[in-house]
Picture 1: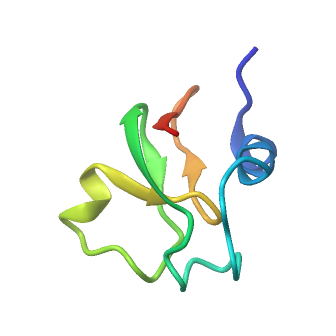
Picture 2: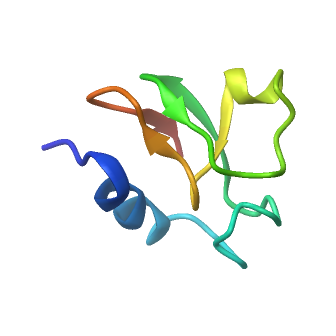
Length: 69
């Protein structure tokens, strides 16, 4: 069963290393494979946002966001 919105991010964060949780340190950087991500970080450049996200601040703009763990 898929997780949507912030609830899914909270679940993901239990499996991903994170130091700060505010999108500043880059510790929870992940590659995303499918879906549309809403970025809330201050780390990634525009070109990096096409394939990567910060798990602590990212949200799904689509029904599902598939990340590479």
